[in-house]
Image 1 (spheres, rainbow, N blue to C red):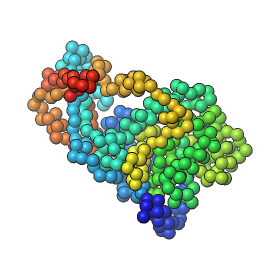
Image 2 (cartoon, helix red, strand yellow; image 1 turned 180 degrees about the vertical axis):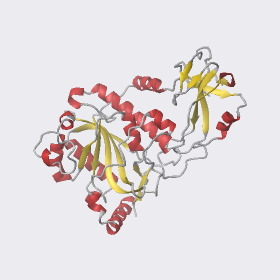
Image 3 (cartoon, rainbow, N blue to C red; image 1 turned 30 degrees about the horizontal axis):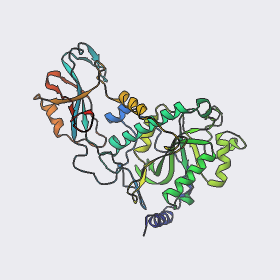
Image 4 (cartoon, helix red, strand yellow; image 1 turned 45 degrees about the vertical axis):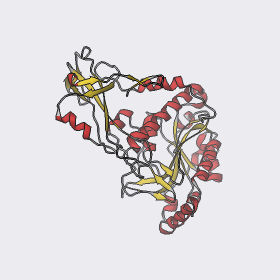
Length: 384
């Protein structure tokens, strides 16, 4: 039995035991539309439901991220200290995130870093490693796309949710995604990224159940300004007043008659990174494939149509590097040579999927900067 046959069998069983969900599950929003910042994600302050919360979700060969096997024993273990020990610049007092005044004289700003395999199936690394990395890539590519596209003609990045008709849930993931992309194109979505979600979070039992839909961070031809400013924009479901309108929801209502897709556009984005991360941390993938890219790019943002120079990526990475909270210098790798038991405990620490990890101020004399070592044959200077 191949993966598609197993998926169809699961679909028949689902209809047999849950006939009442066939109609009620379509068009239901996710748990929430949160937009956490990168700092909140790395500190573990995310309020959205985790993929590993509740029972495991399986539908044929479709799995949810975070429900695979741990890659190796290094996942989540302590890796290194990034710090700034330039005490000649640390001669002032600052307020920490709790509003307390901290004397930074003779102190180093220390940022602990943990190892990650960056695989979506790993229950330890899927959220803090893979999801953060992919959300960062999505943010960068959409920013570069916005520079190359006419803002008047395409507007800002929009968060689009396309719910699939239950009669099509027995098709393969490739067939459903192709149908969704065709439907989005007919509605005027010109390009962006699409993320598969085959599960919805049920608040009552705090678990996941079947509900095929796709999230997109994309550009819409002519933008979404007219629909967002319309008095009927909150008329979700029937879109009765949108009938005959030439804007996005009017066109979508006509397209629904042929493809059965319920397409909704969420509010204006505060953070593209936050939206991308939230959608990635409970996305799904096809486990029957050796390599399944959860994020798919299409239209004007596809890899074939939009080429991004390496210099732009390098400049973006430089801006994203962690900086000292005291003097603003880049944090570099340091070795600890002190005897503080609280800091020595970091070397044996293993980080959980959502455990908070805070930066701290330590004595600068206990941290020694690790010199850069030339790796012969590579032609570049890198940390050993």
